[in-house]
Image (tube, rainbow, N blue to C red; front, side):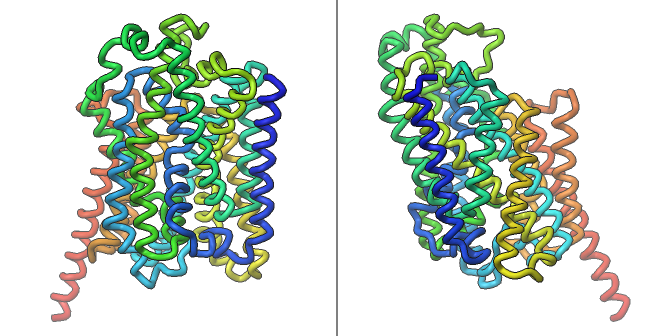
Length: 480
């Protein structure tokens, strides 16, 4: 590791800790710590949303898809655009214009309001587990980037370094630190892609004619995927915009309905096509470099997600490499901090909220910071047990979607708000997804376990709700 790159990297990390310390001094209440004072503008929110949703995990994952399948991997984030814009049209007005939600901090508080306290706690547990997994995936993404780029740095050491930085500044600063650093981090990532990563890699491998001659034509097609690939991405990623705790926190933090909607439209556009094509293009260029023998690695042992960091290590000179790595670490931190705040909010508001409300405001913030620290340590331990960033992210998403999607849609947009039906749907959806994911079997049509989890959740919700309605009707008939 050249001392220039090291200096840039260390300086960036110190800056992030400084931001966390600054906002620690600004936070006066739980409103400040968990929802940023509820008065943040659309551009900060929008860039924070896309930085959180795409972040380091999808940046590394997109590079892996580009390495394996080329430009068609970009369709994964098209589902993000659809989800963001559907949420802007249907979800945000429902949330922002309902006065009952005006003082909420978390997503499960909506479940508690629509159903009952038990349903709220069940939603909090599902969200907490999902976001712990998602935080772990971001820390693993950062560790892969660091260890693949800097030869002297092992994966475990890189994971510990990334974990400590992400956890400490999130613990200190809360959501304001997260949102404002997300804005800076996303700008750094975009500039790194546009002015460093893409042009340097493009010219290093020999330009367009060489690229075309090196790879099969399907790498440049947008149809180099199965319909099952798009369907599986859709059922996992699109619904997250309706059940993601990090997204609800930002809806609460927005000034008003129009501001939140504008933020979501901004986020969707940045996801696809902008980020999607830049991410897979860098992965495609790393595949070209590999085929040319410029990357001295064995395809049989190569992790596709490591192709991009190894390419950057190979082609970028000292100083420039440090800037590009700062850009990628920005993406990693921008998602890890948000997911950690989401999990912390679940614990402090939804699970221990009744107990914490008896404490002074300053003590509530202190306990919130302690919960964030504990969860950050757990996420770091989980990351040490995993190997694939994209798989860990999608598993975490799938667990939350299959458990939470059906009850929240019925709760927000219909009058079917039976608590027993909601609990049964949550348990069934999450359990089916987990069990099918663990079993060594090929599922019908090549679909993900999440498909079957969501439909099982829907079936159980409708059955239990119908049963409860029939019992109520029978009692009414008896008294009549």
